[in-house]
Amino acid sequence: MMHDILIVVVISAVTIMIRFLPFIIFRDKDDVPQTVRYLGEVLPGAVMGMLVVYCLKDIDLSATGHGVPQILSVIATAAAYLWRRDTSLSVIIGTACYMILTALVSA
Image 1 (cartoon, rainbow, N blue to C red):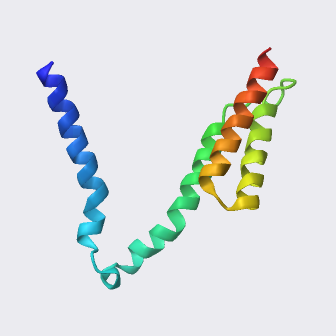
Image 2: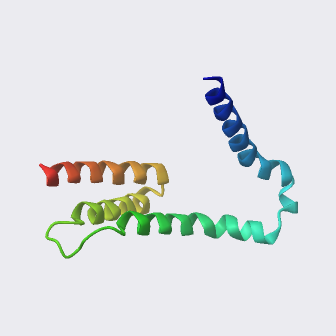
């Protein structure tokens, strides 16, 4: 039991350190290297693109009806984001759309 608690404490401490370390290192915004600024601009979009590809990679488009909930949910997510420019709202709408559509397809 104590070993498990120690593992959780160490993992939590490392996670917190990793999250706060960039703010400690780059306290002054003028000292941020150009490479780090560039990565801060391009990585969020790249990560979202990789997540979309990962989520859609196992869809069998040759089977009838398969992939429809996923594709419609991606379209709903993109439309919600373009409509409100709110990432959280678009993720919630896309997830709700997917859950509803998969429940209807499996029923």
